[in-house]
Image (cartoon, rainbow over the protein chains, first blue to last red):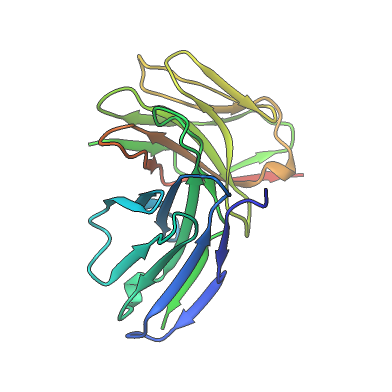
Amino acid sequence: DTGVSQDPRHKITKRGQNVTFRCDPISEHNRLYWYRQTLGQGPEFLTYFQNEAQLEKSRLLSDRFSAERPKGSFSTLEIQRTEQGDSAMYLCASSPELGRGTDTQYFGPGTRLTVL
Amino acid sequence: GNSVTQMEGPVTLSEEAFLTINCTYTATGYPSLFWYVQYPGEGLQLLLKATKADDKGSNKGFEATYRKETTSFHLEKGSVQVSDSAVYFCALVLATSGTYKYIFGTGTRLKVLA
């Protein structure tokens, strides 16, 4: 078990460009989450997958954001036409499906996005 | 709505001092409560958790007790070390609508001086 991995760790892009991030959860974890963390703040929920189904999206996730988990394993988060306000750390987490929501979420190291 | 409030940081302590980081929550229902720690350059790591009232979570000398009557989950450690310097996040999760998203506090930075 190598933990949750994210790629890339850092991304610098120019405003208006598209970016895509990848998350590989812990194997056999059914649940996968994306969060966004800005400087001095706690992580904020973006979206949630159970297997390949995207079950919830935060209103923080504008139309420029899209997330997929096509085979119920890895997930991608794409941001189109990036804006400077998108600069943040994007965190991925996974958890097993054990019960009534008390499951621990295991976080990856994050992808730090800087939009110039 | 559901929320978590943490004490502002940074908290600066000398090695071997007693640590308390306050966390209070507002929730509709009965949340599970967590403390995560983020060391410089690393991801969030679970420190401890409690899933029902009066439960005490503990790990690495840290403790927190789920207090329903005061809606609190304060983090304590009897003797901090320089290696405990990090940002600590309190979080809750509610199993509503079939999702289990965390709601985090803003984090409290701890600096421990030798």
